[in-house]
Image 1 (cartoon, rainbow, N blue to C red):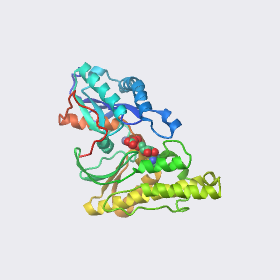
Image 2 (cartoon, rainbow, N blue to C red):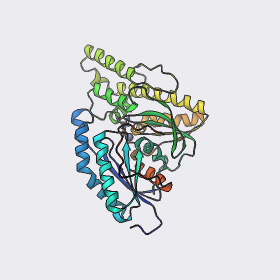
Image 3 (tube, helix red, strand yellow):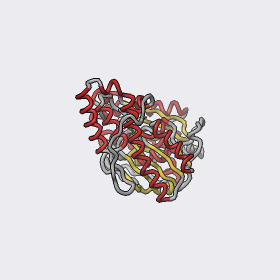
Image 4 (cartoon, helix red, strand yellow):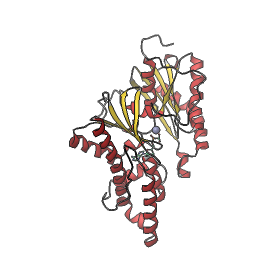
Length: 347
Ligand code: KG4
Ligand code: ZN
């Protein structure tokens, strides 16, 4: 039993292919452990059944490591926070079932967390080693461009738990656009980080790709994917080594197109709402081109930009634990009857 006044939250994340556990004490991060499942690389994408089996194997060692590296005992934990959705059902079930058993065994409350809300609230994680990009926390209201493998949204964040999606993709997510383009080029999964790496050496103006004409603040990436596939097919028919010989330029041009699509709508949203505090979140916010482009806009448009540290961009449990911490403060607890939700709208 935790007899001190401190609030210690164990966070659990298992929505896709990362098994993660983190410990947060009074809003400050003590431990953040992620086990990435490399098995999916063999298949060019996440295989749901293999993901849930790997979560089963990883969850106890990952939690054990998080508790040990935080320097606490499990009896010190005030509550367990876990991702209840959105995500892959089999993957979510492992984290949810583990959390229920853990909470029951220790007689502590459970807190359910929306994964996308977690990505946004990652901006509120306090660490003992702040970096240039992470030592400030956005104030409300702010806009967050949440870009991951499954989602692309512009969210108006009015409070920790008062969020409105004001724009989103009508088909593929930005991360999917990176991953699918990488697959077309014969690169392994996940392709986003590789495209980012090759793009650094290439010319972003070497090739131009289809840009969507979509209403309002919404996005579309399926036309870009089809256009990219046709481009690679045509060029490879002329020169079988086209991709290998021009990898950097292709990656740089594709990345620049995705960033342009994202920023066009983000600028529109900032103008419409008259909000100048702009954050990014989710796996694609690790992209160095996107990070640099946002930093340029900070100067150009007088924005205050918030970019998460790399380890809080892609899936992690620190973002789930911090969301749990804020829910603990308002006593927003879940019951043992809770089920995972493959789809879970942000509100
Ligand atoms: O948030 P996340 O870890 O998982 C989901 O909730 O989907 O995001 C994963 C996505 C993948 O599509 C991956 O390719 C992309 O984030 N990603 C990147 C980079 N790092 C991860 N995309 C572009 N550049 C990167 N550096
Ligand atoms: Zn995610």
